[in-house]
Image (cartoon, rainbow, N blue to C red):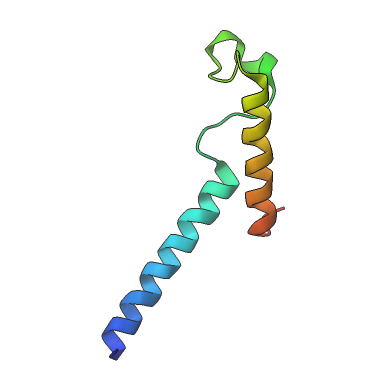
Length: 68
């Protein structure tokens, strides 16, 4: 590998890291877990267990990337 390849690889790794951190902080959606706030428009309204799993996953991502 030459210097140009290493610089490109480092830039791609940095971009992926920043994207993962952003998703861990903000999530894929804006669900706050307060089901009374959204009403029937909430995509998790009918499946509370699925919403709880989703929130646990987001918390694990935040812990993994030290975003607490």
